[in-house]
Length: 113
Length: 112
Image (tube, rainbow over all chains, first blue to last red; front, side, top):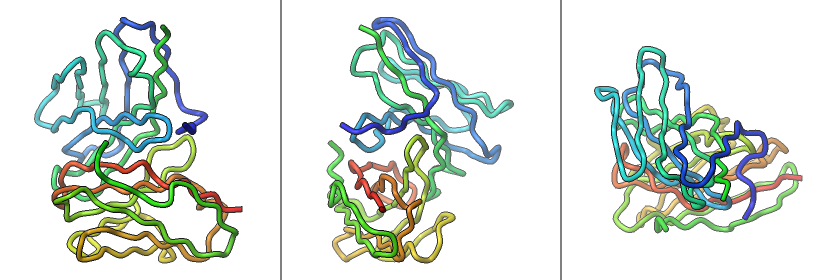
């Protein structure tokens, strides 16, 4: 597959360890946030979302934390697996019904076997 | 897989030419959004089509235009191609204007 990006922030994590990916979002008026995973040669894939009236949401092996005070979002992945290697993007919307997603720059996560 | 298909997967064009990219939305979805993803960056919103009408546009010049057809498939047209138009073009379909976006695999456009 082809590379999604060559100059992204990178994070390398040992297989089985937990990883934390951070994101600073741009608009204090944003109400809805999503984390996407993008594997090489593919489009972004939805992982988990959170609305601004929450500060934490858990999914299967993933947790998203939202700190509106400092406009910060994080994605925690538990017990990482080789298939978690990808580029991860946070995205924001003004509200759930808005048409426009604004993406961050992304972080490349590499899982070391 | 998301059920959103894009064609072609790769394309090489010369500066000044015109290009048309195509997207078939997931069954039942009436909304299609287009994004441009330059190398090393996150996707940037170009525009959205809902039931054949443009419903929101990002910061792209008028030479980027689109269409949505009665079956909700969509086209992205770019005129007078520039070198900086080289990017991965992503299409996403959703059940409604603000619904969860399901992305296709993208079309890699190279302008030389």
